[in-house]
Length: 197
Image 1 (tube, rainbow, N blue to C red):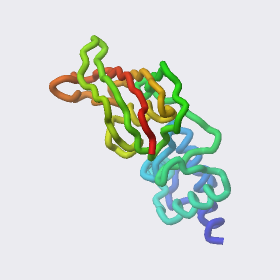
Image 2 (image 1 turned 180 degrees about the vertical axis):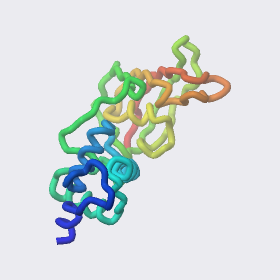
Image 3 (image 1 turned 45 degrees about the horizontal axis):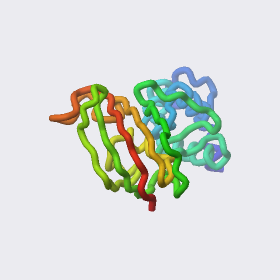
Image 4 (image 1 turned 120 degrees about the vertical axis):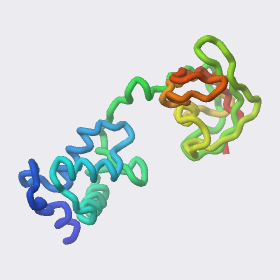
């Protein structure tokens, strides 16, 4: 009964716009408005519901979200984000890593959380090589490398080689990385996947 009450919570005093919408209706509207390919964070949902509907009841929101996930109305791409199953939004152009497989590997596939060993060469668009290594280890999505690498390495198989073009936003951004990487630089990498564990 608590979950049903959470989903059908009455409007907050002075609620704008909601006109009988359930908490989940408001959440679905917020997610559609946000258009995030990775889902909408709990913080975003709270902020949106407060601004649009003057809804500010975290307990009711959390109960409604839990029920919506259990009922299949929402999915959780990450522990703290929510998405509508089957609804996908395109990534903005400045968040797309261009990938070209030059050799498709046949070994184990690299996935989020995998520990990988790579060889690579990094270049700027003018051809300047700013970094290279024969053996470099990191965990995918472990916060150890630029976001463009996390995205660009996933899906590779051991023995594979890939060309990556990483936009500035997923590299070193507006600050760059002195002395070799200027601000707002697109990064080009030739990478080879040596092992996955």
